[in-house]
Amino acid sequence: METQQDNNVRMVALANLKAMCEHISGVCHRYWIEEVTEHTVKVGYSNPDEYANEDPTYAVYPCYPSTWTDDEENPRVILDMLDCEHDEDNPEAWQAFDAIIDCPPLYRNPADDTWTEAPVRKPQQSK
Image (cartoon, rainbow, N blue to C red; front, side):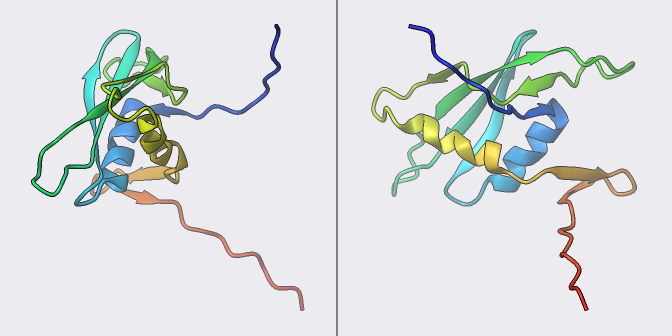
């Protein structure tokens, strides 16, 4: 059987992905970069139980080297999950990583090295 597919896939720099993980993390739901290899990036997610016991799940995303000069440590990550690890107790754990894809674009201010969402432009009212 041959399936059809035509969709947009988000690609971000590793630096952006780190900022996105911090941006969407909260007291309970936490995201972090667990491991970076030549071809993959592993992102961790945890929502500890009421006793603060961690039970992390990991998403593995493909990546490739940056084509920019002097940017070798900042690969490009394709947000199209290859694998979801440690999800034996919860086969729907992969859904927790949708928050990464849904994270709004973040931009770094080089003056103070902070990350913020892009300002939302309001449509102009016609007179």
